[in-house]
Image (cartoon, rainbow, N blue to C red; front, side, top):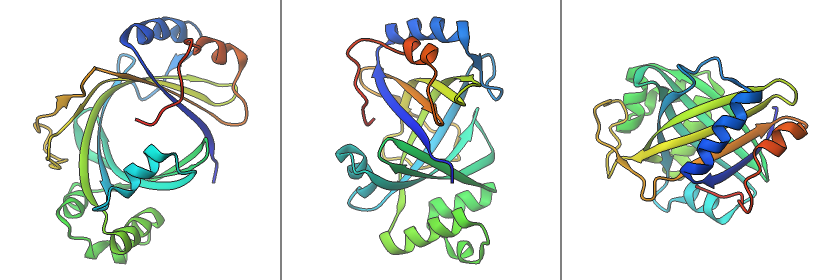
Amino acid sequence: MQFRHEVKHEISNLDMLILRQRLSAVMIPDSHARDGRYEIRSLYFDNLDDKALREKLDGVSIREKYRLRFYNNDPSVIHLERKFKQGGLGYKDSALLTREQAKQIVGGDIRWMAESTDEVVLGFYSRICSEGLEAKVIVDYTREPFVFGPGNVRVTLDYNIRTALRCTDFLNTGCITVPIPGSPCILEVKWDNFLPDVIRDMVQLGNRHSTAF
């Protein structure tokens, strides 16, 4: 299990424009990006007490969350992702789901999961049974990803963040989502054992603070 350093900052649209110019001068776009960006739709799961959300906002050091995700409005490839956080370190693993499997999970039919041999699917099944996890919120956004070899650095700019109101119809690409108030942008920096000075200097934006979003 390879944990990575992870830092997030909420930034302004002007900050994003500045960073885009800086980063593109030194880093390269992620190979999965189309014209330097891609669209993400995620469906997050939580219990009736919003345990995962509260732990994130409260800064609980060790926590875990699950989400479904697909890219570029294409639900033919769906990822079930499990995210671990320990302090400022993060680790993610995932499993591929069929469209029907994802539909069953969202609808509460999880019997098939008990027969799976995939560790992520079984872990999710266990949490659903023990904590009552259920589909809670859809989040859509645009991501611009940049990578840098030394330190295995990945910097992302997320914007056009939208959410569905009381809708968890994850597979409906026509599901209406609305912009988050204030039109925030999110800067995220990830690296392995060291963050090169050239990248550290480029992402400095004055009095920005790491934040839960």
